[in-house]
Image 1 (tube, each protein chain N blue to C red):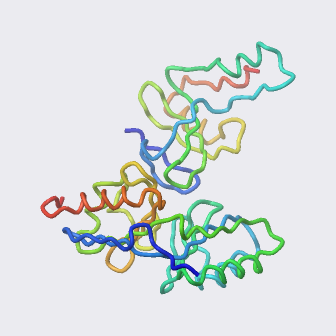
Image 2: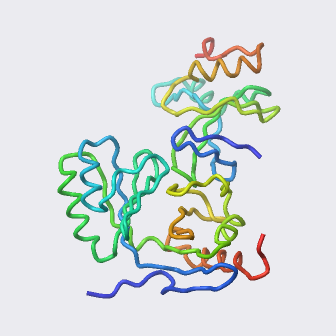
Length: 111
Length: 181
């Protein structure tokens, strides 16, 4: 059972109280973008085995969207944070690197 | 003026705990965040202070619950809602807020008795051992959204009116004599 702490209301909510929102930190490509960019935005997902950033909504609680960093292989949760950021905050990255020393942020290289 | 009717007309059930549908109860959803007149507005309607996150402030038959960072639920006698809406509009004039009378959109239940918590333990993914007095917990009861808090040796549960009979069924089934935990 996945348990995530909602950063808005502080409830340690179990999975059935939440709704998944899939990959976090997607950059939207809308009108004016190239077909390749739009296709990548629509369909290309990282789907890593390991550290992953996800959107979740505390549907049955305060109703807010938040983001979570967790490991897709072990279900270990590194932390949750409010959604008003374009990339994971430093404290979350530190928590991940404490547990996965080899892991490096990959968004610096991506578009 | 027509008489207000609650969703289940005050249905009740006596199992190992007592289940009662109460109401009609006046309820106002107030969406607002960081307003300078918020304290004053809530004080004027419910006589309570602004609740801290996940808390409910109860004063007699008035209460104010924290629903989310920008949402409060004001509870008051049904007949006072019209006047309260006017007070809110006056107190928060010119400030960005939304106040809606949701009295008829909700159903309210009381679960009472020494084992009232057991009725809810079976239905909600909530750690009742860590639920504090004065805490308002929004979660789900089986398949539908519900909010609960402890009050007067029991629990009060609020859900949407459209699922009132479903929730009554859940509570009735969960409180069957002999099914204590």
